[in-house]
Image (cartoon, rainbow, N blue to C red; front, side, top):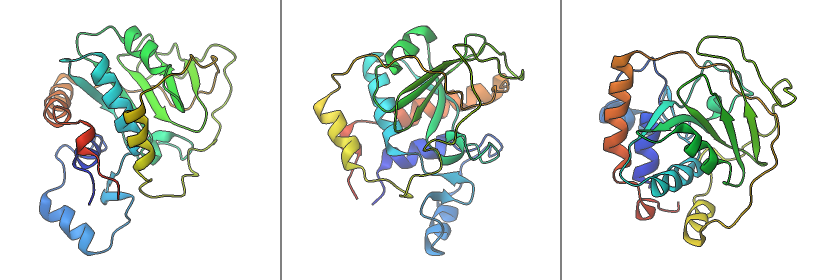
Length: 224
């Protein structure tokens, strides 16, 4: 069975144009029709389970603070973008300086971290090698990368062989804890500048995120 936390957060990370998540009937119809197992519904992609590991680590570091997903699965983004493959989230933690979230995220293994000082989020993605970049652009502006910026590389963004990766490595990572150093700074820009959200959109995302993430713990994960 699909872990409840993975299902819940994947629904939260749906494309922004889907104002409401699919109904249970729509989800069941997708399963009954043998739809693509990488998706919960036609426009709702399953997140990579390692992203839930990152969310739990962030939540543990800032207990009692709501994690807000600004952007998740983006079907219209380039195939070289990890947002296109359910391997990236743009997020922030309420009442926590974004610099603190960034400094925590760069300690995670196999994680890309994008710092956007003129925007409202920290980009976190799952990849084979750690990466860090800085984009000075504001919302809706062309990217302005620093630290030897280079064009986006396809890397491993589209090479995941499993529609729903094995959850056991993610579980083991949580159980053992992390004992690693900071990755070397590397310019590997992967994402376009993020557009702004309206106050209503932010409030809707905030409310949904608080409800779903309140129950995310190790016990919510079940190896398939």
